[in-house]
Amino acid sequence: MTKKTADDGTVNLADEARERVAQLEDRVVHAVEERLDSLGKLIQKHPLLAVGIGFGAGYILARLLHRD
Image (cartoon, helix red, strand yellow):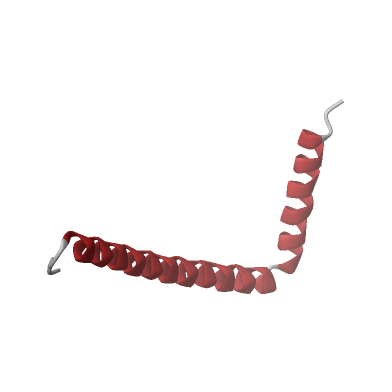
């Protein structure tokens, strides 16, 4: 990173930060896509278990939200 002026250095730092954020975003998106693919395969392999887990989670969530 070369700094010719203070403004130029600020612009370079901002560009580097923007690039790092873009790289991080790409890595996160890729990781999420891999996990979703893995989850999809697991659901296809065990559909009844997936429905049971979904039902159980929904039941517990409903009980927690509607306490009387």
